[in-house]
Each structure stands twice: as C-alpha cells, then as structure tokens.
View 1 (tube, rainbow, N blue to C red):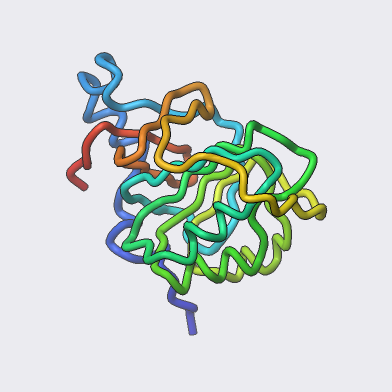
View 2: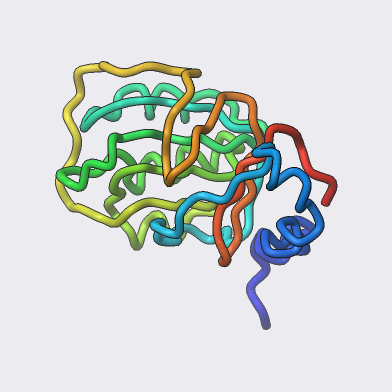
Amino acid sequence: MQKTTHTESPMAAFATAEACDSNAELISNGDLRALHPIFKIYGQRRCFSGPVVTLKVFEDNVLVRNQLETKGEGGVLVIDGGGSMRCALVGGNLGQLAQNNGWSGIVVNGCVRDVDEINDCDVGVRALGSNPLKSTKKGHGEKNVPVHIGGTLIRDGEWLYADSDGILISMTELSV
C-alpha cells in the first residue's frame, strides 16, 4: 500500500521548469524570478506554493515561532536569516506548528535542525543546511519587509513556487 502525501496532490502537477518555459516574458521583465540553487530540500512536500509572508531575523527565532502560530492559509513563510550557518531558525516543533496551522512551506536563508522531525511534517521546507544549535530568543527582527535571498528580492505578498528543480518568485499568482 502506497503512502499518500501532499506531494501527490494537484499542486504536484505544477513544475517550475514548465512555468519558466511558458512565462518567458515574465522572466524577461523580472516579474518571475528563480532563486539561486543553494537550498536543500526538507519536509514531506517536495512541491509547494503560496503567497509569501516575509521575516528578517538574525540568529533569533522568536518572530518565526510567532508567525507560525498564526493561520498559514496555504502561505509560505520566507525567513531571511542573513545566511547564518551558526544556529538553526526552524526545528521539528516549528515544522509541526507550520503543518498544524496550514502553512504550505517555509524557506529559510539559514539553517534548520531536527531534520528527521521536519522530514515527518507535511510541509515543504527549504534551507541552506542544518545545525543542531538553537537560536537566541530575544524577539529581534522585522516582519512583512522586502528580503534579499538567493540572488533575488522577495516582497511580502508575492507568490512562491517550489519543487525539486528549484524555487520561483512571482509578482502575481501563476495559473497552474
């Protein structure tokens, strides 16, 4: 008997490569951008998409937890952790929180931890790598601000599409 996951949902039919091929004009004018291929794949959802909510933090995940405690409604939390590899901003508990609150995915310009737990969560996660050290808990950072990750500017409210080929950012929702 085959295990059913969200990777077999209708969203799985969306392919970033096909989106690039069929939206050349959006790519040329900058409305559709591909992030540099620097992210590792975690979580059960290999393919996910949704409207972006941005956070800018540095080695502090209080705002990450606060955001994941809200209803995700299929959104994608994009966390600019400054590319720090010194500690993790998302762990297994936050992965479970994201799943429970309806987030489609999380993209971390930084590290995750509790990789086995995250891989058990029905959420898509992309991060630069893993680190067992936890972050500080001071509550510093900014929400809903433009962030620069993977070679592109990402604004709150844009759309993110991710699959095994990569991550796309679109100014508007693409037709799937």
